[in-house]
Structures are given as structure tokens and as C-alpha cells.
Image 1 (cartoon, rainbow, N blue to C red):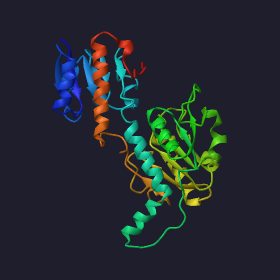
Image 2: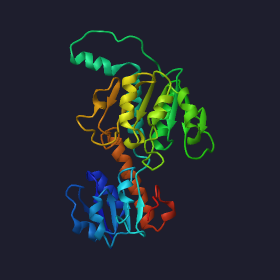
Image 3: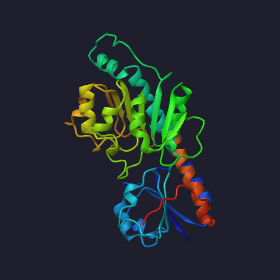
Length: 316
């Protein structure tokens, strides 16, 4: 009998759903805050994000299904044995994060950040000209689940969409153009919106640095909901204060996180900052999708159909 450790905030319907798939297995429910090293050591299967430090002694572990799309902490040397199967929850967060990015985009267009400050000061004052998504050009860096969802929404609102990804294959309907990262410098001056949903890799670290921020179209907006280290936040602060290219930015992720209270970016003009909350489980549908992915993969794993499992992460 396999032991399945569920380390997610499941409610009774979720637990019953997972247990129905895992008939004949022993299911143990915990949370990342309360899970013990002993519980981890006894599990053959883990559903959820256990603290990576607890995995060192997990000799029985065969497979871990993360409840996050990100997996950086679990592929570091010494965390998982090479033979442990690792899967993530890519596909669960696109809806929530893309809608968060869209909200930020519209807030910048309509200067809602300025009006929020005016409201706090009880100041009744118009802030002048605004911009529109309709007729604009949007450059999307990273066309995973989040990037695709965001691009399709911008396209529906009348924006000309340009996508960047590692490999160019068939162009989806919601993209007007498709490029690789080699073309980034040529594309930046064309875009009214530059939206980022990239993973954290050596290649993406400080992708948007002082030089590339300077290539952006005057009055354009930068939106980042991928990984904070893809943008040089100090260079971004300086670019916003100069005002010679960027018209504003909206960041759900920063480097570092949390952003220190004395970081100048907090007070930079036209900067909208949120505390890495576009995803998470704030939208109930997101957790439903996470549980759905976990359940589908669990069924395949227990039936010996590993080749049918989603979101397998190579490591080791």
C-alpha cells in the first residue's frame, strides 16, 4: 500500500476526489506549515509543495507533484534524488495571473495609480490624456500558459500582438507575429506594452537591463508577472525617474522579494507594485485547477502511465 502525503489546503470535496483516484492507498493530509520530516519520510507520493529541506531524508519518495508552476527550489543539487519523478502545476495559474496582468495594463492606461494617490489626498483633479489597448502593439515575452492567456485577452481588446518564445512553430490565432529572443532589441521600440511571464534562468536574469529599458518606446509600459530577476529593478527605477522612454510599469514580482521598504522603486513615478499575489490560490478556480492536474497525474501514475502525465520536470 502506497502512502500519499497531500500537502495542500484541500477541503473535503478535494480530499474525497483524490482519495477516490487513490483507492487502495493510504492518504495523509497536512500543510506546508505543519508537515513533519517523519510524514515526508514515509511517503511514496507527495502532492503539494513541502519545504525542500524536508526532502533530504525521503528515501521512499517516488514522485512529487507540486502545487506551483515554479519548481526552482526543487531542482537544486541535493534536494531530490535523480530517480524521483517531479511534476508541476503549469496550466493552473494562467487565468488568474493573466487577468491580473490585464488589470495592471488597464490601470496604467487609465492612470488609476495617479487617481488612487489623488483619492488618498482628497484631491479632485483630472490627470490628463490616457491611452488605450485598442490600436496598440503588445510584445509578450514568454508564451507559456500565462503569456498565452494574456496575449489572447489583449488581442481580443484590439491590440496587435507580438510573441517571443524559444522556438518558432505554428503561429496561434491570438498572435500577429512570432519571434525568438534574438529579435528582442528590434521589437522593443515597436511596443506600447511589454509584458513578461518568463521563468528564472541564467538567460533571463536582468533581461530587461538599463540598455534594453532604454530601447523601449517613449511612453510605453512594462508589465512583469513572471520572475522578478528578469528585470533590473534599480535600472527600472532610474528609467522611470528619467522619463525618457518608459511611461510606467506594473510589477507583481521584484528582485529581491519582498522588496525592501527603503527601495526607491516604491516611490518611482508611475510604478504599480503588488506583492507576488497575481497567482497563488486567491482565485478559487486556480486551486480547482491545481487539484485537477494533481488528480489526473495521480490516476496516470498509479496505472503505470507515466508517459501520459502532465508537466514532467527534468532534473538531476
